[in-house]
View 1 (cartoon, one colour):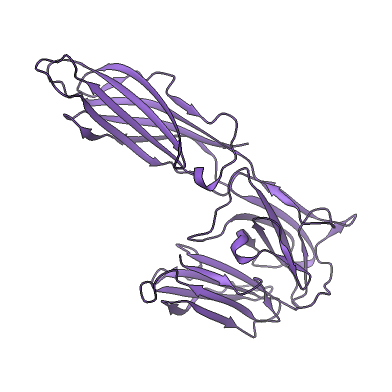
View 2 (view 1 turned 30 degrees about the vertical axis):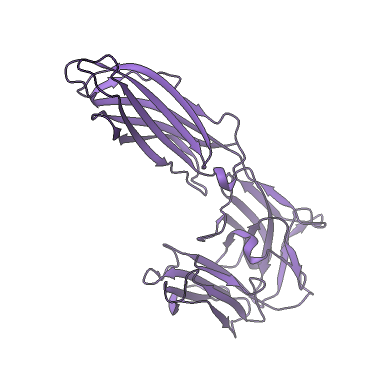
Length: 373
């Protein structure tokens, strides 16, 4: 998968940033574009990203003479999809503060009773950090799997362990940053209910820096625990379009299947008499799936998909006929990430597809909600 890989720590020590472009494909089979910009410390006008090179194979990049205190940003796109704003369909992103490489660094993060003035609010798919800085500086917050390590006294995550990041674009005394999953084709997103380490990095116009990896002021790296996820799905309505029986009502079984990931499926069914002609079925109130207590989510059960199956019973019909089968597949439900992660009573409707037998068609409507607790 196409990605940007920092060579070592994601910092431009003494003005030099080093990283690699990995297309994730056989050479010549995929072309990606690298866009970059330098954000000066205290810039009054934000520069645009610009296209600097295209690659169809693994390629290492070094950028030197970056002004101390500036922020060097790189974004990777499929060829032709780059944007001057740096957003859109970003394949991978890196943000390099240009810092002085020294283990002797000033105290820039405000500290009261030796504790850094850092406060986190967590959701299920993101975290929000407030950081007090004096004098005004720029800030970056990263979340990662496991614990960060140290290089030249600065805490950082290995490239493959950084899963979320947020960075300020202007110096300030107080920063509020929403930390969401990094753009990536192959890295894990932030998952509800899981623990993540963090590193808060602050720097000034001279490239001098300070950092914190816990909220105590001393000791080992700390962790954040995201909220757990609760999903509710209800089969709300069924509209019969064609019950496959021209001269008589039919008897049908409807089954609601809610699947978490690729393995855990909850199945509920009910029976009713059906007629052609847009008949509205009174759906049984038991056709509701609720994860109950909010769950910790792992990669293998991160998605939630919904399918409604129908079996029309033609036994005893004259003349004899085979049973009819169809389904309405809703696919993976939209589970937003970031500050807008909550979903309240979202309504979806899908028309059925015939599986076998005569045409038995219907429209299924579901209502679903997503909460984080």
